[in-house]
Image (cartoon, rainbow, N blue to C red; front, side, top):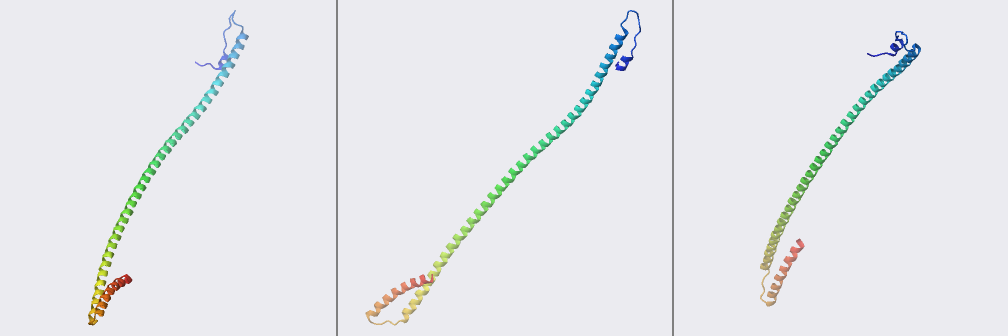
Length: 178
C-alpha cells in the first residue's frame, strides 16, 4: 500500500496521556510528507528521463542497425564489383590472347602465301627465261642459215666469233628485258 504525502499530512492519531508531543509529531509528519513528496517528484522525473533515454537508446540502436546493414551491403557490393572486374579483366585478356593468336595465324598464312607466290614467280621467271633463250636461239639459228657460207677461213672464224657474240647478246638481251 502506497502512502501519499497528503495522507501523511492528514493523518491523525488518538490522543492519550503521556503520548508524544502533538506539535512535534505534526511537524515531523509534515517534514516527512514534504520529503516523500520530493522523492516522488524526483522519482517521476527520473522515470520520465529514463523513458526518454530508453527512447533515444532505441533510436540509436535502430541507427546502429541501419549503419551495420549499410556497411554489410557496401562490403558485399564492393566484393561483387571487385569480382566482376576480375572476371571482366580475365575475359578481356582471353579475348586479347585469342585475337593475338588469330593475328599471328593470319600472318603465318600470309607469309606462306607470299613464299608460294615467290616460288611461283621464280618458276615463271625461269620458264620465261627458258622460252626467251629458246626464241633467241632459234632466231639466231635462222639468221645463221640465211647467211651464206663463204669458202675462206676468215668467214668461218667470223661465224664462230659471231655465234659467241650471239650467246653474249642473248644474255645481254635477257638482262635488258628483265
